[in-house]
Image (cartoon, rainbow, N blue to C red; front, side, top):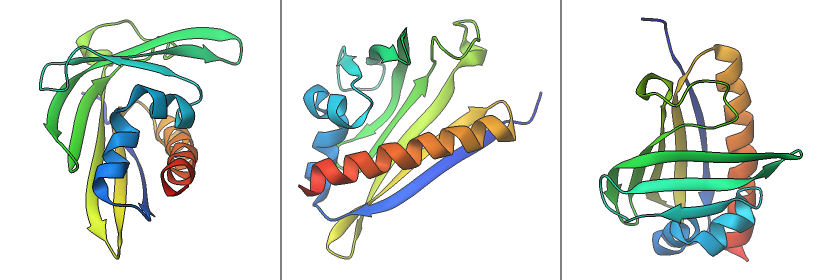
Length: 143
């Protein structure tokens, strides 16, 4: 099997975990920090399906995944596949995205990890995107 690469972004948000968790799970808030994406979830439990729809640079997309682990205010892990990835919608094409929340000096440290990038270059690109997303999320939660 080919080696897979991991993208990682982390930062401290000066807000309690429940506020960071709300920003990660409330579709109204997600739309504000995730490039105007519409998120929908069947159920916030293991096996629940997450969908992300929107438009990026004039192209419509629909990304999706399944919740693998969920521990409110601590951890959210899901599979992830993007219609813009150029890969078929088959299990091997799915990546794994984790949002881990830890208390940190009066705030919450958020670590976002995306596993399963095909190349080091794609992992670096994903990391750049996650760094931008994290900054947007931080601005919204710290308002």
